[in-house]
Amino acid sequence: MAETTFFPRRLILGAAVISGVLLALAVHMLGARYGLDLGGLWHSDSHEFIPAGAAIAWWLIATVGFSGGYFTATLMQSAVSGQIPQRMRQFLIAVGVLLLAGAGQVAAAPSPIPSVSGVLAGLAALCLGAVMAFCGAHFALRRG
Image (tube, rainbow, N blue to C red):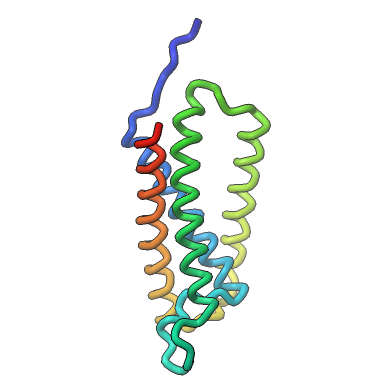
């Protein structure tokens, strides 16, 4: 019988945070392309308290960052022992590749957001995604 090998917790945490951040940035780029402008908070011409598109973008990025970190940490813990079926692995890899390919295509197109606002929105999405991915991965590792 083969001996079960485990990944170090810091390796799982680091990989889960990187995965969550990449997914959060991909969702930010796709959302900005379709009108969910995270930089809508910094526009002074709107008379609304918080534009709905900006609020949805914040929640979407936070949810995807947390979920990406949580599920990556959970999957990495169970992957070594062979508890993930082969079809599930292939499905998850395909979804991740398609999401990142779509984000790459969107990133190559001209940005609909002005440059300073786009840079601030990108940095905010990066920070929000990193914090939420860390929280999700930490929660998954504490639970397991």
